[in-house]
Image: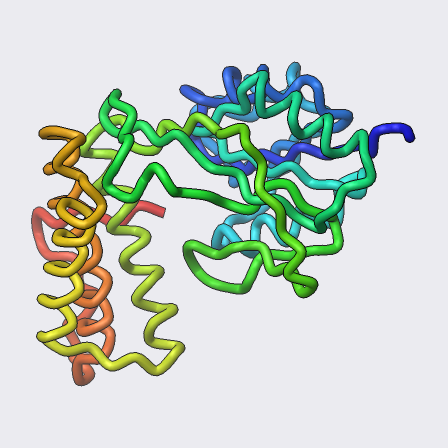
Amino acid sequence: MERQKVTAIVPTFNEAANIVECLNGLQWAEEIIVVDSFSTDGTPELARPLATRVVQHEYVNSAAQKNWIIPQATHDWIFLVDADERCTPELAAEVRQVLAEAPRFDAYWIYRRNFFLGKEIRHSGWNSDKVIRLFQKAHRYKELTVHAEVVVPSEKVGRLKGRFVHYTIDSLDQFFEKRMRYAAWSSADLDRRGVKASGLQILGHGTWNFFRQFVLRLGFLDGVHGLVLAILYSYYTSAKYIRLWERQLPPNPRRGILNQGAVRSAR
């Protein structure tokens, strides 16, 4: 049986530092589409020689961006890769092998080797991190503002042995910029679900996250990196509920005003 063809999709926004290495690892795919959110750092220009197509589309959220581009793929299987991820030769070979046979599943989980400030995190719960990234074109992402996953109605989801290499956080500035954005988006999802903020949630979720990540998931074995990671993600977890609490405050005519010295929110 002839191997089923695949379209690799890479969403980008200001990924000049990542895009070339990412796309170099995808040259085996029959089609590569880069969907860019109007980068200002030259990402599209770097991508064009290595991609089949580079298209630009205004970013609303991750799920909406991916759901917009998936129907435009030429082939029936999608391999979705973030720009800060690397498809290793071993993973590429496994994907090709799966598609050379009659695939037993409609989608596949792929685990990730996650790097934080230059070190691979082997514990802290990050060793079990996985995402659905190989799936049939008919499937779509759940309509969430952040952390959306592919919906597979048949629930026929397999697992690949190969892993992505994921350079998730390279600096603390990157962490705070990215995660505070995610905290705001997550609070919007919680608000739509009718979750009510409370002081107990703000304190409890952050404290529990630290204990689970650093103690139960053996984050202490990752050394100082594991300690810093647990502290940062506890803060991020609490920040989601702090932002939710802010959303649910009584109307305030000064809400949203940027006072002198305030840092403007990133896109």
